[in-house]
Length: 93
Image 1 (spheres, rainbow, N blue to C red):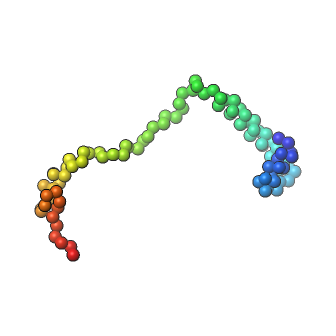
Image 2 (image 1 turned 30 degrees about the horizontal axis):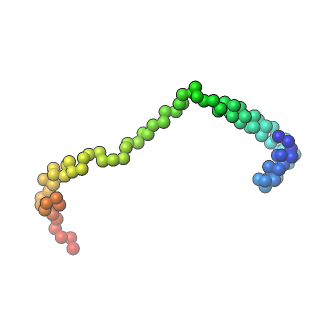
Image 3 (image 1 turned 120 degrees about the vertical axis):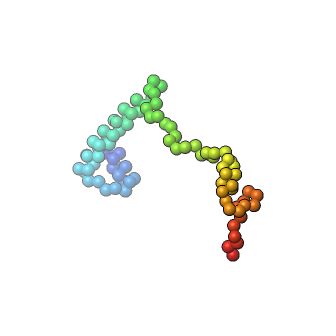
């Protein structure tokens, strides 16, 4: 990258840089841009590459683990008083 381009980027970012920092940034940005261009070359054709990460859901499925009402009658049989499908309790108020 040219010095003028780096100075322009610094102005856009509202960052003040010295001449020594400018030279260091010039080398660093050049290395970064070279690396990105290599990645672009490689990322063009990935048809022969298998999935590197096995993507799977480790959480359980949302849903009812049991059928509705399977244990209702067993539970209601154990209560002291019931009225139909409801547990009968004393009035609180």
